[in-house]
Amino acid sequence: MIIKIDMNSETALYEQLVNSVVWGIATGRLKPGEKMPTVRKLAVDLGINLHTVNKAYAILKQKGYLSAHRNMGAVVNEASAYTADEAFKESIKEWMKPFVAECLARGMDSDETASLVREAALEIKNETEGFA
Image (cartoon, rainbow, N blue to C red; front, side, top):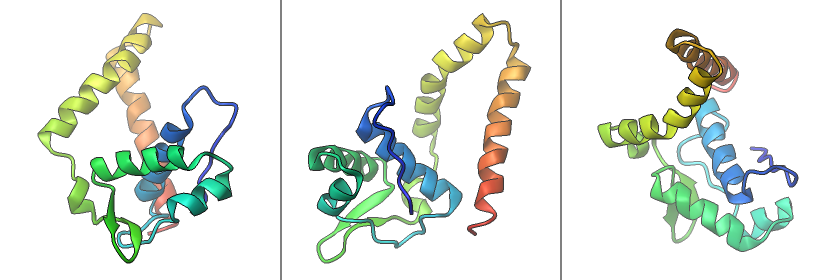
């Protein structure tokens, strides 16, 4: 998997790394059981601090996307380890409120806003079809 980091982005590097791995899982580029690069290797490959990679991996483990194995390092978990439960759905709803508020403030109605979310989901789904 190619992990993309934009050194000029306002988004923190560890967040970009987390987002890139989650995107890889969502699109099927990263498969359950797949071994991730070591923290040190990924830091060197990306030209970033190893503590940044370590922080991203810790977040990914906390969210259930990765697990640590003594002999293998970080490995992508089966989907059942991070299935969307009610607590997750509630946290996503809270996370989305600023996005929805901005859409409404810019004159979009709730149908237009929901349509944007559906379009984004469809784009991701279409991208996954090439990797399934």
